[in-house]
Image (cartoon, rainbow, N blue to C red; front, side):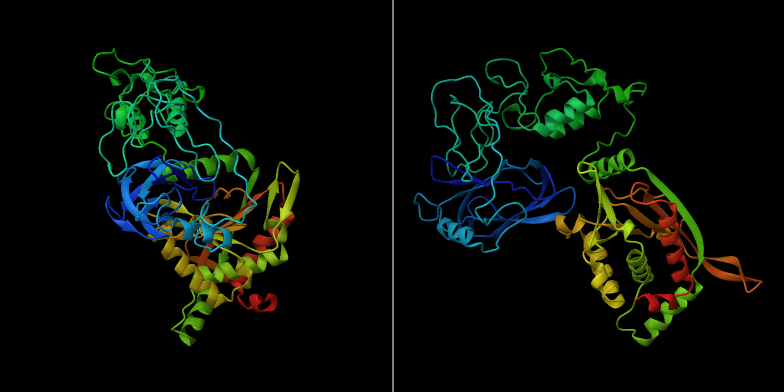
Length: 496
């Protein structure tokens, strides 16, 4: 994703990082203005709602501008870095090499951009046109042939020359030398319309009833950023003000969903739903809206399971097996017998799709929130391989180094909430999956063994399932099989 400028420089746009992500936050720049970069050199580390990703630049040359500072959120398709040719020619150094690799399919790609295969078409976005003004150099089309976001007509505002780095632009002009379109599409210099570029900002303001006309933008030329809207949300409505010379803005009526809620007090802590918290909220809300879920549970004596694990680890201490790995193996055995739960409902096609492979999701609590990394085709792994893969995957998830592709595509989820010291739960299904097994803590409890009361290691197993894919007989059969294998691990041998 790039755009050619009149000076011969190339503007690399923030690529689509996959899975429908529309923005990313800049964590750290790895280059500075004036540095020389090579093709596919990592230039910036960004954080999406799902992972921390290193972004390589497909062009070689000299860095003349960095679009955005650390901590700033950039929408997909907006300028990220500007590269000038190292040799002063029309094409940036290394561009020909990049084009050859793109035609050949070199594989030097990040999800959603890079080398192509010629068969993919991108939907052409509609142009946003401003009122004409004295002629100036037009914005170049991206190399892909699609119209750039927010394409504008001629403007009298000067463009930022190549090599100007991140110098402050003229009023009303963003860091790319383009007059930003206003929220209603009118010229920002010809009226009082608010300066808004990002559709994300407009949507956020609309959903929370924030009057953009009453906000003072902190972006270049007064552009209203997402942080400005979030700051307004944290301010009582009567204190939201715009320019010093204008009256205080009157907040738009709250959406219907907010009717009856008291406004935030000045001492309240207001936490905007952004980043991964917003993704989690959207996914769980969608799950509850669309899936008619049912939860069933059973207590199981895990004494024999713990003894089996101890015996395995004593025999091979260099390759330990966790309880989670044994539970994963039990789930895989159950899904082999009850494949109805390894499925999802295709509502548009009015059909149930049972997956050929088990792509096992493991719920993992991290500093960034609850993530569900996926082990694809987990049924192909041995128990020891499962243990190693689970340990590495969980560590990568907590470190934030998993790529977005590893956080989607699951067909069944295992959630060990016992690590939080709780016995049971009614977990929400990880949409669009059809089932989730939850495991509570393993604790000493009185248990009847051969007619005698004894102290045993007991855990509670909860299965939440989509009632559209099966009825209680299938769900109960799966859960009973899991419980039987927990109590008698030897049954696993008979089913492997």
